[in-house]
Length: 395
Length: 85
Image 1 (cartoon, chains in turn purple, orange):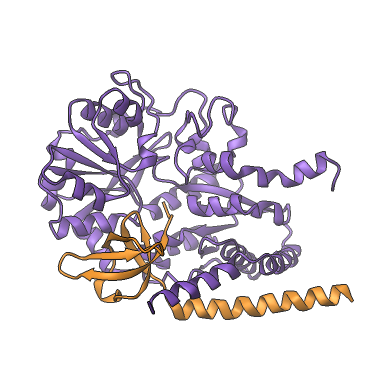
Image 2 (cartoon, each protein chain N blue to C red):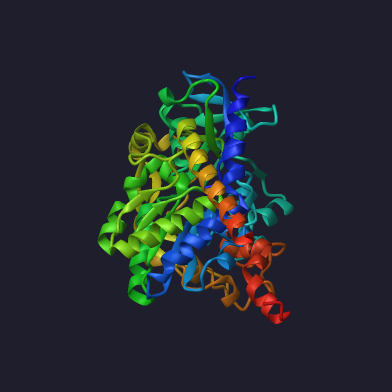
């Protein structure tokens, strides 16, 4: 079919975006730019998929030592409060059918609820839990079924899908959505502010490419202006990320702090206006809890009053987590909140790969494919290429 | 949660806002169109994230970046030749 020639073009682009030659040339260019900068360069890659690319392709080992790439809070599963998982475990054991993404299924809670610490445990103990790839699957499975909940975790990327299904009334009456959606621009603002206050300030940010397809590059303007920080919206291939780093360095050299777009094949400055309108008409932004971190103003989306009939909070009388009742919700010794906020690396955590590993995750960052600990556990060896070579006296 | 997969739009249900997409394996899968429907046509290359179409890939931009990268790759070849000499 003619359409598939388009796949061929994309494949050709992908080959170039993963090309060693192109990457080497960009690394040389980055090294030259770095010589013009006296201070250390601390760049936060905000999205979990960026962290995956940086780690999987071993980009840190290619860059000058002066450049530090720090993983940010770009994994919604990692920041979902333990309390909601505990509530879902109870409901699943009371016979409510729970539909959830695969990573949420394994997300460990803090408290043991009726013998279960995760939805996976709950299923083993007879709870009604089923893994789905998204709301589309849940809608198909829930038809003519009993009372069900779809666990709506995610960022602005999935949110328009949920909003669309609600607006078009595509959801069966027995299926309710538990919207635990998070918004990224307030989280970025919060993170940068916190790092600025407590640590060495960031020099640049690689902004999430796919969230930006919806919110547009414009969403990061406030952070760039308020904190005088260069921001580049990047794609997810290694060359995309290297180009973003080069653009950040160029901005640092010229003393600029603006939002630039590298991922032009998928993102525009304004984003998708229909999706933005959908979000504001179906949801309301609320102060929301981030696991191990606390409440961030305007960072969560809940279904608004006009569409309450789809809302699992309303139908199943699930209490919202209140600020006054919020307790630090990470297991003892777990440093996931520091890792999410870029204040620690997975290897700084004493539990990493000892008590906590992908087989038996102890903290939330070890569960999802986008969790920093899980990424470092699975692909992190490339990060230590330099250390290993030095140890073997090969460098 | 930025994991997006490219797919070709094979069919669109404009009324419900569903698209049937093919990730290249020949299997048709349903996805919501989260973005403006008028941006999407049959045969378009899109990015799908957790059953939601979140963007259309601009082939013009993809070709543009391909042109730039090919030039860079060519520069790399020449650099290597120079260093060998």
